[in-house]
Length: 323
Ligand code: GZL
Image (cartoon, rainbow, N blue to C red; front, side):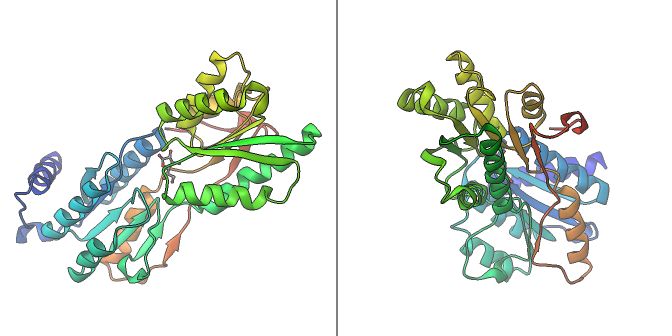
């Protein structure tokens, strides 16, 4: 087994370095999945990659994994390499929603089904992908907004200034976590959204955003921070700590993902709400690969079960998060 994985890894390096090789006839027996992962920008992403690798192993599938390090052009070249190798299925976690039609049309012309995992694409031709497996980000955004309504009620607040630290611009989670949140609080006179700045889902940029917002609006000018992922939230907490501001008490902190470090902060009262976004998509993706390689009909979209953890819940019930 190790030899096979090593061979696949060597082959992927050859393919991506341009000396593309096509799949040998004798390799056609085992299912091979080409997976273009967008990067390793957060604990969520690292957990997601681990989930895909574990599920591929459990199914006995070869996995050609390419980490694009946040570069769309790298994802596009990886997909072309997967096509050249004639993988059975392509899995793609698209860093942004646009710019995929041409390369996905090449996959379609090659007869290779594409599973969009974790994030969606914006296309006029939905025949370019077979199925989307990932979160309902609008629901996640609404859950964040619903928590804030409950929190404002509990505080008896007349007015709260809100700032948003958003994810990667034009990515599905960024767009829809913002849309869902604003849908819920829009029209409620208690809330003013002062500004939204993008931290690109990176802890370091989340820190920069928090510093910028604090300098611009002052410690007393911000009542709520809505951050699109835990990595950026943890960066923001460092800035608040350094300024002598008590996160979770002086400023309401709403986050998304549910990684261990953020859940620990929730339990410590430093975060008020975490909307869960599970990275464990591997089993659903590889089950879908199995269905596709067996010619079975599949749905156009699949969303995993997710929940929300808030200060109003019994937090002792939250088990180890695994990422
Ligand atoms: C959401 C995923 C996001 C996570 C971030 O499904 O795309 O990207 O919320 C990750 O942590 O960087």
